[in-house]
Length: 364
Image 1 (cartoon, helix red, strand yellow):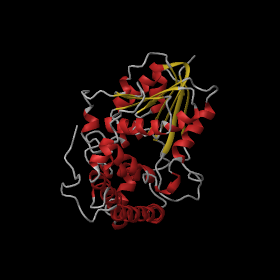
Image 2 (cartoon, one colour):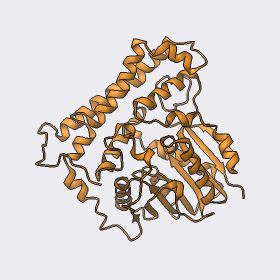
Image 3 (cartoon, helix red, strand yellow):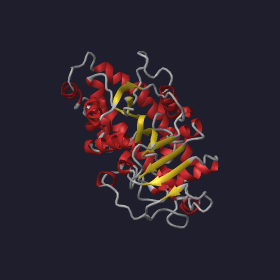
Image 4 (cartoon, helix red, strand yellow):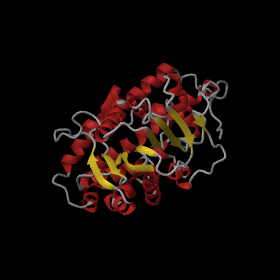
């Protein structure tokens, strides 16, 4: 699972220092904020009132110079963020020896991290460098560090309050539950940022955090151990075939998981959620689904292409209420999610993901 990369003495760039890296990443973020707050609403104003169908918006914009510039910035700001001279990957690769050594796991409590180094990863997962992350989040031991740093600017409008996204989701899920869950299953936990707020909110719960990525799981377990969240177990396994006992979980959750799978795998994940839930248990997924109009849909579909996320459009076009009903869920709620204060207000004209909560109950 190792890749060659710029450790010390291996082609190290003398100009790639902590200071130059931070300055370059800050510059890219500032440009992204300009793209978010100024270019996006200006583009929207150009086509208002816009057609009712995505095809109509596409006919207006595909060859429009402003849209092409907007799309160029979206694609290449992400590329530079990860792979430019001052990108996330070269910066972390320059510290490879230290970072890999920190992930040994030798000091973790027994059972906190379970890895399956010989598992076969799904082709949809390995076939595309999602987010333009070089090699994906699975192929390099330092990929968890790269992904963690990259996630800090995924939602630029949150700024220093990026953690609020996960905390706000946890708070919403908690408000919808009648009782504190004794068992929680976080599907596709990544490096644990989605899991940690649940572990803090329910310190007495047994929480399973599952993912395909060994590098992310190693980082998540290390982070949880450092802050003494020992009610967490990190497990490398396909969450759509979790191996957890049937009727064993009070709560199943995920964050930004469904849009990274083909529709048949999305259905597998929802069926697995149903299988492992106890009767009366609740499922809550945070993802990108509700799109209010044709312009938003056109921009979202374009983002999927530009950011190497080929399954964004298929998820948005799935009839999730019908799928959930057919599986057997009740109390289905698919609702817009306010990722930061005022994000859903009419006066907020900035670009944002179509954050959506997809919740349902397994009948008791």
